[in-house]
Image (cartoon, rainbow, N blue to C red; front, side):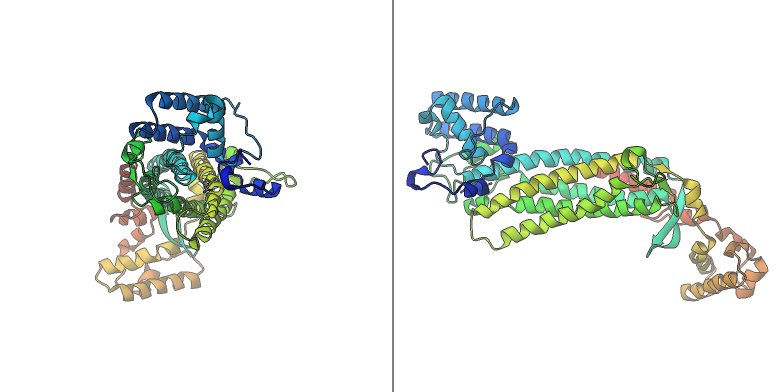
Length: 459
Ligand code: ARG
């Protein structure tokens, strides 16, 4: 029992299953570097308050750096049953290397409560910065494809029914701009993750006038958490990350769903590269979009982590409770899942083959019925009547069993004499999309403006 950090008042041993149930070392060992950097910053601050002498600090720092090497070289030996978590393990090892007298001073005024929150925030901040880079890659691929392929027109859908022609690039940019909003949100989240809880102690604060600002600066935090009770209780930074991730995955999932549909033989607009497809063990002809299906599937898992953690936290009394340890594993999984998903999506998009002739073939003249109504609007007909008249042209084409653009001028004029001989100009998909040149529309200039906006967000 002596080996336990809190051995002083405990006499009985732990149930062996309880030991395992309680320990987090097998996953929170991922924080080894953050834990050591945090300890060095903390020891330096305690040197300035006189808790440690300069010599003691030097010994502690050297010992901690030695432990860092052991983790990096994979020679750190975890003692099963004794090393409950990364904080316990590092402190135990420090005692072995530099002796317990000096090592025992390191934790003065500190608790694992402010320590674990510090480790998690440092780890998450760095991971989110990596995610930011991956997300920017996805944005860049989206923007450059949208630029290069801007001439192609395809059906735009509502209710998955053909609605109006749009540019293929306009479709890409519809997600591109959602992803760029995700990027803006991510940068906000990082700011709030990157605040320091260190120096808050177990819950009440530090009694030795420790300079929390200096610690925060050394660790690259952008600010402090200003209430010690909430600093140790807070896992909002993980919840917010998961909420952010859930929104991003929701976008990626719908994007995937669209591409899965567009890659079916029935649509045939796109084909995934071999690098992101798999075959069937039974049907030789099959090529499946497993990459996109996994993105869509993993989205459910992220939503689950988000709601799961919110449930874990919602009824906790003030400050630290061991329940909070349950935020660590889902945080790891969430970051890995989102990071992988963004990179897979980038790979899918950058290697995707498109079939513009299939997109074109999927367009049908009835998708220009709105253009026909708008033709009349330009001649002064109120839109409601124009809509009705155009509907009658659609019905006439149906009766005649012809596509609308094959009706004769006389037939069209039989519906309404305000149709002039220039009406046939309406039956042109490129004209239709180019007319949508207000901001946010599907004309070339409007789509290119969207690409500029995306690039501005990247910065
Ligand atoms: N492994 C713990 C966690 O992840 C560290 C904090 C333990 N603190 C405590 N008072 N038992 O939350």
